[in-house]
Length: 315
Image 1 (cartoon, one colour):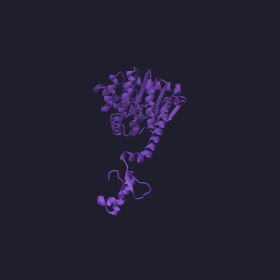
Image 2: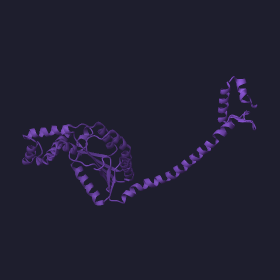
Image 3: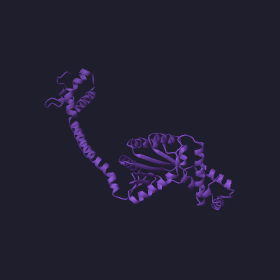
Image 4: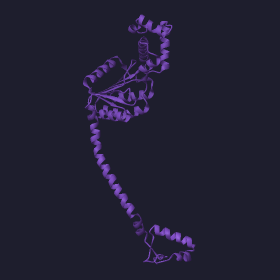
């Protein structure tokens, strides 16, 4: 067709279209702005250069898109400027209260990261239970390494069963190589993190993934003193297998089980408190009952008290 004017019938004659097909082609070309009517003649058309057609067809949508893009960028910039203000005030907002409840895991992680970054002298942690999940170890590895590289002292107490979990052992070995101090104990532990003896995080019993942030000085001082007592009675974390150390730990576990038996605790409660499986706990209970000649759990509790075994332990 070149740039000359044409009619719909010309498409039928020159291109072999049927009349219906020719009208469809013309309608499509008009829709894409590739042709335009000439003068006032409703059936006389001429071609429009593709770049001109593109401008006619897409000009307004592109302008509208650019307008929305500029608006998004403006809002993004304004909100981005608020992020540092919010992040910087998170701990300040919480510091204004003696006790603050954090009920979601993301909030706990954010708070631990901020407290770790601000810590200058020492972090105390106690970790109840056995081995820690791999994702938890991976998350805390980099954060803890940065802490130690700044010269911050770190002391951690794990429960007895943690020394038999390979990922936890590898994690502890790495921390100890960087200067962290780690011990283990068979007794009951509560999850605790204390930063610079000023702020403490403990478990939120109403929200399994949450935590409680404590700033009240007297309470934090009490928590530090409790940790120190546990630290003195704990043993060095055995980075390598030590038969003697393992035997001592096992004796400590049996002692704790006897103490809790006297208090009337059930196997599930005992295993949860000292960080071992219920099956392992039951095996220890059976062994204790056999060694002291107890007929049942109640009799075992009586004999433990009567024989004063909590003072002498098992030989």
